[in-house]
Amino acid sequence: MKSLRYLLITDGSSDRVLTHIITWTLRQHLSSGSVIESHWAEPYRLPGSPPDSADRLKWLITCGLQLYENIDTLFVHRDAENQSPDQRASEIHNALAEIVDPPPPVFVIPVKMMEAWLLFDEEAIRCAAGNPNGRVRLKLPACKTIETIPNPKQVLHDLLLQASEAAGRHRKKFRPHQRVHRLAELIDDYAPLRNLPAFQALEADIHTLVEAQGWDG
Image (tube, rainbow, N blue to C red):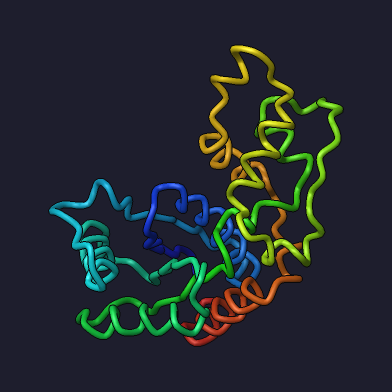
């Protein structure tokens, strides 16, 4: 395969960083030399008013596919949070069942929040915080435990602020949520996530899709 276009559907704006994780994982399974073109359906820029109900996911997918044509595969993200991955998968199945001829889908369902998948690379965290040579000790969780953390978003934001070593006015102006996007760009190897069941499921689904579509050359 020479070129693949995929569309990521998410609930919130911070979740677009998943494109970096998805693209890295696709590269591990696609034929050599394949070009990957990622698109993200930003929820707050989609046309119309989003419904505040179970129809919201269907609306996100429908509007996204209207904006981005000739999509080869669709990645649909839902954080599991307080629901089981099976429940989230069922919600996605139900939404897709109401859409005519959608592209082949892959479900992206972290156990807690997307931010958990960014808690393993200390060097990248320091660089994203704008202080690559910082010396403050960062207490990163063991990679195999990151999906058990109750609030990974807060943990990640705290780590970025600590890594910045910002003080006074600079500390008040520091915006961790903006640094998260840079962090996802800086991580060049997501292989440590292969210790996590949720990521294992995502990669297995990507491998199955690539084989089924004959994209592995």
